[in-house]
Image 1 (cartoon, helix red, strand yellow):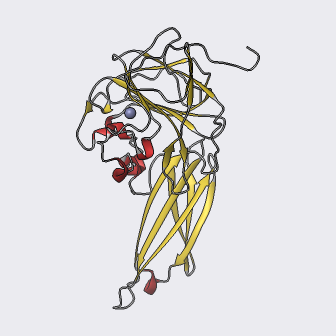
Image 2 (spheres, rainbow, N blue to C red):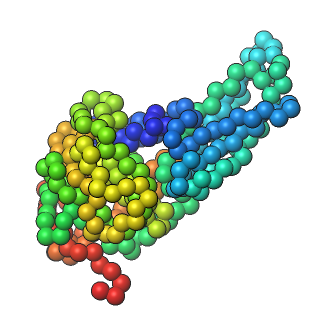
Image 3 (cartoon, rainbow, N blue to C red):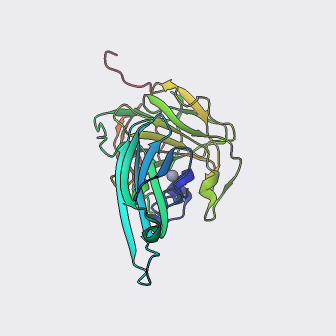
Length: 294
Ligand SMILES: [Zn+2]
């Protein structure tokens, strides 16, 4: 995005120094003006009213920082205010008021960060995830949870599966497609490569998101707003974004109160039983999703 564009440079795409970048430049502070979050400034007499608007149909958790420098005198005192919150899809919320008289207003700079999902979401830890590829196939895990290479911090519970470009990617859990990027055609391993990632973000019923990264150009087979079911084919894997070889990066994230995503541990079902912690070098055979009543 600077986070504003939500480049989604998940860690595996950023180099290993993990926590520092909080996994993605994606979550750096940026301008408050993108396709999801808008901050409006309205002057009303002596005050400036700031309002946050969610332009999308899905909840977002934001953090807005306002820095103002009074221009009226020589003291040049700076003030900083912050507002955090979650907005439902299309919701507008009043953030704060600031003095707006001509003498006192000075320069105001506003920066924002946001992530998809509600900070109040609670992951359903009992949910059994389907492996994110076709039933009857298996792919080698090249990074599991807690991998020192690049799965730490925000990406602590992400999994990378080695896959040739064009391999079908299947939904690991039911949900609604919230965000798609598929216009990129580049993968590289330098800082900043994360902006080239193609991805699909699926909003689960518990408010967490399943995110599928590094898809090929035009590799999304679903549209924003589509309801998908676990096991459904949704995309084609690739090698876009911050990546050193063709693979699928999958993780489930929850928004934190600081407006950052945090991956959460998930459990998969495989032909060999339940997988609590996918191990590097292993291949897990995908089986159909488990449903109540099956
Ligand atoms: Zn990864």
